[in-house]
Length: 485
Image (spheres, one colour):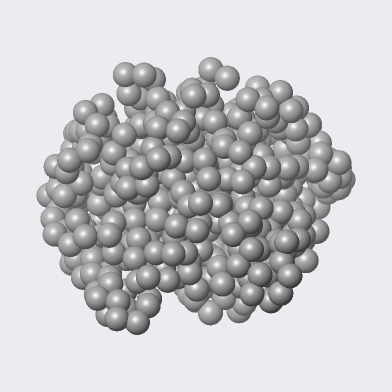
């Protein structure tokens, strides 16, 4: 089946002329039509536009003028990344009628490689959530079990890849929003180092934490996409001038890695026994293949979740101030004066979770509380980064669960925000420290729901991280299994 092939498989088929881009795109369009109502992973898509892009790619391949090995292969886009002349709602009624006037840098780089920009993928509203249930356009279902969530906030991206609606997808990761849904949906998700990928054209949630990254069927798939979208961008002052490597080749390098096991995560409360057992088997695999297994202790990571939700909500409060019914976004028809425009437009346009985080952000930045909360959270952040960097003096890779449990049922945690936030307990400190991390499938629980293992690397150490992940993947077939959709 075309729609379950990897990026490498499809590229090989194009190279030997056994498939054309229009064949590939038609397969994904057909699959999306067949499964779209069940999953709701797309907010919208333009079939005619996608096929038009594919036919142009057909001509390039036939004339030997293809733009890259991946020219003509579709990639799904999370609905907070700007694509010229396409809607960008960020999963919110606030931006329901907004049309992007320009391409984000990552989109421009994908176009330069000839990839087909395919659809707008569902997400938690303004990326605030861990289940894709806060989307104003309705929740996305997990293709492994339609009564379960796909994770969030990039749940539409993960579900679409897992279900064969797209080969690869872009997501964003502020506290685990690529890695957690990748784990829940049994695929690979990469959060690059902060500054590795441009954020220009990506709607900001928490500017010091957000990072764009790929989701795919294999480590090689996400490595290929990272090589396309990564690199410095003059439009983003936080992007770093460090050369992009051939990540596909780099991921084939094998060596006896020093693997650190993060004791605070492995011994913590809330870790499901099936997840713990699966992670234990991953540790045994690396040890049995000559890797040194070393315990790593980062005492301050226990404060990471609390510090994260202070910093993230403070930055969200600031970033979302622009959506006021005047400059951007929904304007209330009930408004009769300027004060009404602000208050009623935001009350009508934002969902409950976004409002909750705006209120939290306003509180932690308010007079009398700024130093008690925000300043202290930033100090904790510095301590966490320092502890990670000291740990990397002794290890090459740090290993942990991606999530405490496999995917949970819809509505199970909607009424308990704290329980929902705890899904991010193993992922948020990576964003706080600005590190790269990847989630790869490593097994299933007793309900046959996927489990992910997280590997964390040094800053801008994506090559080593991808190589260690691919080494495990090569010896297992979890990434080749597909949901019974």
